[in-house]
Length: 349
Image 1 (cartoon, rainbow, N blue to C red):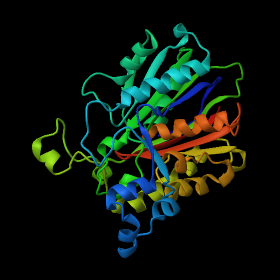
Image 2: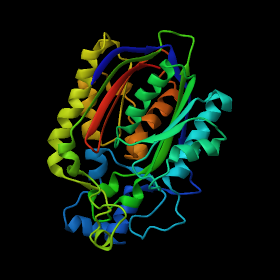
Image 3: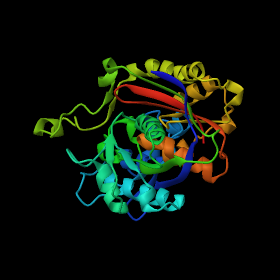
Image 4: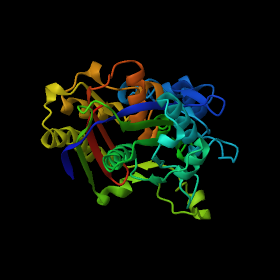
């Protein structure tokens, strides 16, 4: 679905992130090398012709935050995605300066929710002392884009402010034998969107699409609740099939092109590009298709790795706080996630 000329008069009022060091630890590539190969990791990797810098130079992965160690069994004391959601939401709420009664909706998203039935959104709302509608959505790593588009719809319908929050604890579903170990990180991010005086700000183009035929190429194959054979066979661990690479590359190139078709905004009018932090290769595919210069891209993959759908919000938070993105700037967001789901937005923040 492609839409244009959507919802003017709305802007970002607050942002926040969550990487609580008292609940987790920052892990670099050398830490993982040691866990995988032992104290003689350098010798072992050299003998097997493994480049210790490969994950950084090829994919951009250098460090990430983990609340759980994939080389150990998961335990009940480790922080959950809800913990990160709540902290990120508290930080964005504080940053906004809004009062509790001014938040009209809470929308959360997490691919690693700790709950079967109840929504993390209601718990986040309760943790903030809010009494408003709250719900959770799930669209893989594109969930943040979907949630943001929905927020603008709610604002256009009369809501004053919408709090969005995403978080994942991918460390709990990473296989210690998989190369995805270097990619996945934990963390959360939140933004608040609401009414602003400037009519020039808002959502001006959106594009969404999905194809369930590729769902099994990037997923966790085991069913819930996890049966004994699922645990023994590591079917509760994240898997990625290499056959997906060509498909993803074409999708990342497609998103900016579809957004330009849906919008009166031209390539030279986009001030900033923020991609989902999947890996450096795919992010670069999207950036080149957007026509935005590398220095005007919200790329923080070296700092956090792939933290799921909240990576777009994290990059938006950093870019705003570092004054790389200013109110009124035209920003293109893009993300692709399991499902497959993908999409993008053009905002004037």
